[in-house]
Structures are given as C-alpha cells and as structure tokens.
Image (cartoon, rainbow, N blue to C red; front, side, top):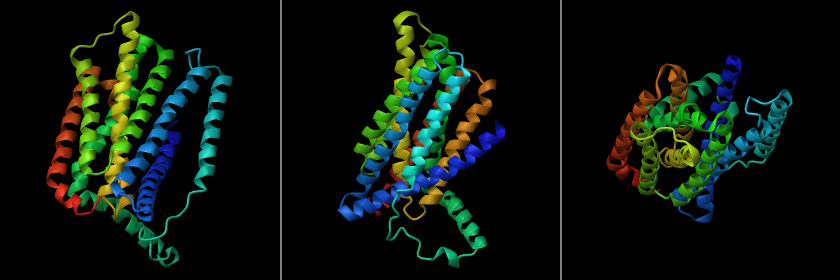
Length: 326
C-alpha cells in the first residue's frame, strides 16, 4: 500500500498542476477570442470543472454503496466490479484528454523545446516552483490553501469516524458522503457563476468559510449524538454544509490563483497542490493521536488565520491586483 500511495501521489501532482494550468489558459484564450471579461470566464470554467469533479463524490459513493451494500467491505466479486467501474471511468477520461486542443498565442513558449538542455529545463522548472514563494500574494494565500486541505481531510478522516459512523453506521458513510458530494458540486457551479473579480472572490470565500464555521462551532459547543430522525438528519445537514463550503473553496482558490499569477501559473498551481496535499497528509498522520475536540480547535484556529490572511490580501494587494485588468 505504501508504494501504491507514493505512486498515486506522484501521478496526481502532475495531473492537478496540468489541470489548473490548462483550464486557466483555456479560459483566458476563450475570453480573448470572444471579447469576454477574463475574470468571469475563469470563474465560469472553474465552476463547471469543479462542479463536475465534485459530482464524483455523489456518483462514486452511490456506486460504492450499491456494490458494497453488505456494509462489511463487500464480497470479492463486489469489490472487483467496483474497481472495474472505476477503471472504465478513468479510461474514458484518458481518451477524452487526447482531444484537448493546444492554445496558441502568448501562453505558448517561444523557445523550441529541442533547443533547451535537460539541465536548463530542470533549473527553469525548479525556479518556476520556488518563485511564487517570494511573492507576498502567494504567502498571504497559503493559509487559505492549507485550510482547504485541512477541512477536506477533516471530513474524510474525523467527520466520518466520529460523527457519521456512530449514528448512521458504517453502511451510512457512503450515503452521507454522497450528500456531501452533491452539495459540493452544486456550490462549485454556483460559486463559479458568481465569480468575476477579486471582490467577488472575497465575498464568496467569506460565505464558504462561514458555512463551515457553523459546523465546527456546532460540534464544539452543542452537538451530541441523537436518536430517531434527528440522529439521521443532523449528520446529513453537517455533511451538506461542509460540502457547500468545500465547493466554494476549491472553485475560488483555483480561480484566484489563475487571476493573480498570469505569468507563472505552473509554479502557482504547484504551490496550491503542495500545501493542500501537505495539510491533508498531516491530518491523516495525527488523526490516531488526537481527539475530535482537539482537531476541531485546530480547524477553528486554521480558519481564523486563513481568513485574516486572505482579508489582508484583499485590502493591501487589491490595488496591484486591479492593475492586471481582471
């Protein structure tokens, strides 16, 4: 499992940086070709993409729930069928990727690849990854990126373990996460439609973190497992709120990175995945050694720090941002 995890993480890092860069470049090209507002198009493209991506949590969990319905991990044939379904989905995505079109213009490298040595390419790549760390805008966005990873890992590791399983059982995790995925997808599309500038991103992100803060405060102060219909509805309501917040954060962070870092998108999106992945890994590593209450306090602290840092960005860097004509 460890070599498989390393391989999946390595592969995912390449895929996600490529996805963010290509989606932003395509949005800019589409805006220029059609005379549209660049920020609005970036928001729309990210909303559509992350809405479709988040739907995998709904569809995937429903498929898993159907194929592994005995609640004990499923039979060998059920598990095999599940992997076959996922493999077919991945194959279809790979085939569709072959039809992506290369956008020409300012975004295309002017220097032929053959004229650049391997060492030069490696040095250039390394600089593109490190350079964003010297940009105050990236420094101010990193806390929000880190929080986005923490809240995802919290849902996967802590929320399912301490909130869903005790009330709905192991078999109910798939259903609750399907609700999470449904609201994640809906909020992604809605947030993308509302995105047009740094100001709109600020308001939407604020709404997203406020929604999630309701769940954290609820769990810290008031929540206790209930019986009957309330015992079913409360975890599902929390899953819906957490999903809505996640959809907002994923859409807005990718749109924000695309707007702020026009000239170094690869490096900026690499930083996005580095900090998100590191925070996700951190939660999974410490999960066996920390209580739910302690984790909730960490989440609230991370939320406050990320919001303060992001608001500082909007106040102090908004003027420089507006000069980019987004």
